[in-house]
Length: 113
Image (cartoon, rainbow, N blue to C red; front, top):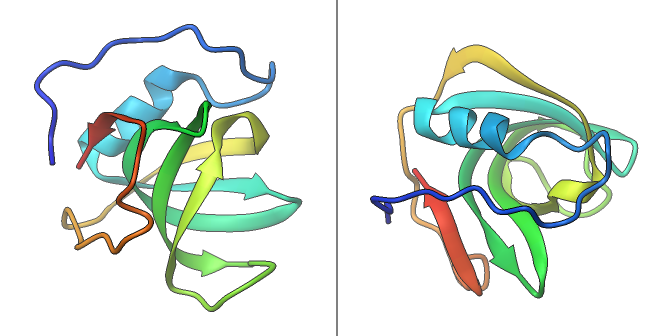
């Protein structure tokens, strides 16, 4: 799913969270991203940015790094307010992957690959 219009929203986020513009850039450019979440390093393909349960989240296909639960690679949702050390790499991924339920359930999709 790809939306024609993307709007910037001013939802409250932690001061050191990644700016929405950087999330948009990574999704539209299909750039692999790295960041720290729950004090664990993650390397991911960002596929969806949206709202779920009142929180800004990104859905990623985690390629490598660490995880507290489950294997890698795997689909994971991340609250933007809890992401630290966000970086866009110069590596790209080919495009959309089939997203299984419940990861496909959103209150609002703002942008997707």
